[in-house]
Structures are given as structure tokens and as C-alpha cells.
Amino acid sequence: MESKSRGTLVLLTVAFALLASVAHAAGAHALPPISEDVEVGKEALQRSLKLMASERAADPEMVARVQGILHRVAAVSDLPALPYEIHVVPSSIANAGCYPGGKIIMFEGIWDKKKGFVRKDKEDELASIVAHEVAHAAKRHWARREKGGERPRHAEYEIEADYRGMIYMARAGYNPKTMIRVFSRQAIREARGHQHSHRPISRYTREWQQTFASHPTGHQRAQALRQNLREAMEIYRATK
Image (cartoon, rainbow, N blue to C red):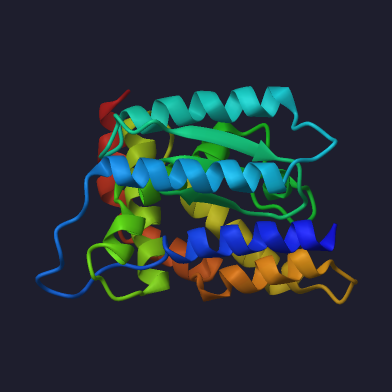
């Protein structure tokens, strides 16, 4: 079991590390065709889902809910033609991620009442997470990092995905203020130490925590989003 978990971690760590920074280098290389993103993401997703196979199936109601949200958000993204798909993984990890080409995974722990930071019955909150992951794919972070010669700046890729995700939310008719609330809640969880409890945790969970250690804090993300809220709200009001 430990070998299986570590194998999953290796695949996921590599995938998300490739999605984690924004470019600064001038004269970056031309990006490959989008079809390469899709093929890389498809292969990585298939391997990971095989390794993460569980005897317990994900809640079908939640699967249908996040799939519906993905459909709305992806349609108004910068790359609406990508073959987006989302998979709910039965795991206590409070996070989500996106492989190249729009292949998204969301762990059930993200809506856990104690350590999660979205409420499963609040569609706008779920949309905040989905939109962020869609933005990673639509802004081609993997290709820009691996093929475009950009320097890795993990925090900046996350901030960009937050910003574009908030815009996608607004275009899709979800209240962009919600994303700020979600990351503010994450900041409270971080401050209370829910993700760094002294209780025993599995090596798999511990290494996942380390994987996301380079991400901005919830407080930093909420602060950055506030700077762009006016723009997003104007878009949101226009949908009403």
C-alpha cells in the first residue's frame, strides 16, 4: 500500500510542479501545439487514477455537481475547446490539481468539515476551485514552464491561476467574491494548524503537504484577489 501511495505521489508531484510558476524571461521559446498538452495530461491522469484506485467510489452526486460546474467554467475560459474533465478522488487530502490539457482531480478532503475550505453544498465555492484549476490548463502553465523556457516561480503561477479563475467565475455567472472567501477560510485553517496537526498522519499525506509548501498562503492569495475584484465584479454584473 505504501508503494502504491508513493507511486501516486511521484506522478502528482511532477505534474503539479510543472504547473506552478509564471514566466519572466523575454524571448521565450514558441510553445508546442496544444495537442501535446492534451496527450501529456491524458497519460499522466490515466496513470494516476490507476494508482489511486480505491475500493470506495466517489459520491456520484458530487461528481455530477463538479462536472456541471466545469462545463460552465471551461466554456468561458481562454481555451474552451480543450477536452476538460474532472475526477473526484476518495481521499482526505484537502486539495485539487490539474494536469496539462485540462485533466482535473479534486480530492474529497477539500470539503471536509474540519480541514477542508469549501462547503460541498455551495456551488460558488466549488466553482472557485474548479475555475482555478481550469486556469492552469487554459494559461498552459505546463507548456510555458517545460517548453517555453520560463523560469519556475511557483507562487506567481498560482496567483495567475487565481486571477484568471476569478475572471472565468464571473463570466460563468458565479460570484467572484466567493473565491476571496474561500482562500480567507484557507488562511484560517492554516493559522489554526489543521494542515500541520501533531496528530499522526500518513507519509503520503505528509509528502502532499510538502508538495504544496511552495504555494502562496491563503492570506496572500486572498489579498492578491482583492486587487482585481473590481474588474471581476463588473464582468459578473454584466451576466445578470
